[in-house]
Length: 288
Image 1 (spheres, rainbow, N blue to C red):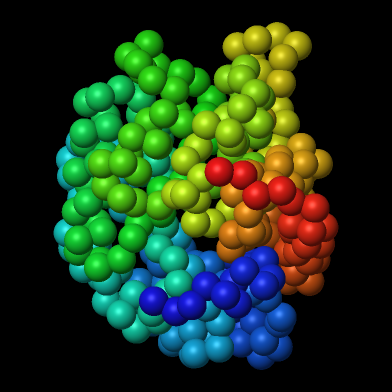
Image 2 (spheres, rainbow, N blue to C red; image 1 turned 90 degrees about the vertical axis):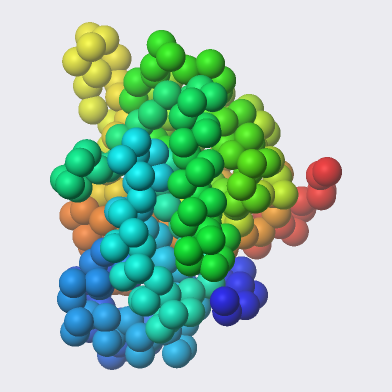
């Protein structure tokens, strides 16, 4: 695995297919590039570009098809293809979602929630350990964006993630924007949520745009949707600074997956993340 120092110096951007040719041609200044490997496994031409870029940039691999919350188990064929790509690009970080997205032989185009209880914890922990053993590297688990809760949940999300870290020695990807979305939708305090996460497990931050919409189940209410289709909102920037004060500097990724803007817009968001990180770290008092 490559050193993360360069990724700490500057925020990274999500490398999406519409920007690949421009990134290859212009080699913009950015801390690292993060990819969804599923976009490259079936696209040999794009994979060649990615391999070329991996010689200059640290690469972070963010999976969307592992489905660690699925009762059907991990797709070993997909995992094998993923390992082949990882061996070629030698990524700095490998991560995925606390969610499930498979049913039988079908892959769903959604990251679906699961209850936070002992049964789910046992299932997810077994799958995380399987993924880590097979890939030969730590797996970063990302906190989800939440829109509903389960009656069968017996613990809070942060407690679930903390116990997952204890059982598997995995790391956590703290998606700051998801924390805002979930806190506002579910009615809890996002700063208390950040305080509840295990500081020694946080290995990366994500920042992405979300979209407000009317909550049809609560007339007059508002629901935040993790759309990755808009600039990063002020509450997410504020929580990002709060997270840095708690956890310190971590590789930070700016995501934009829908209504994808020009590359320069994405780079500008990453520059803003750098500015906030530098200003916050300069006044940070380390915590235990």
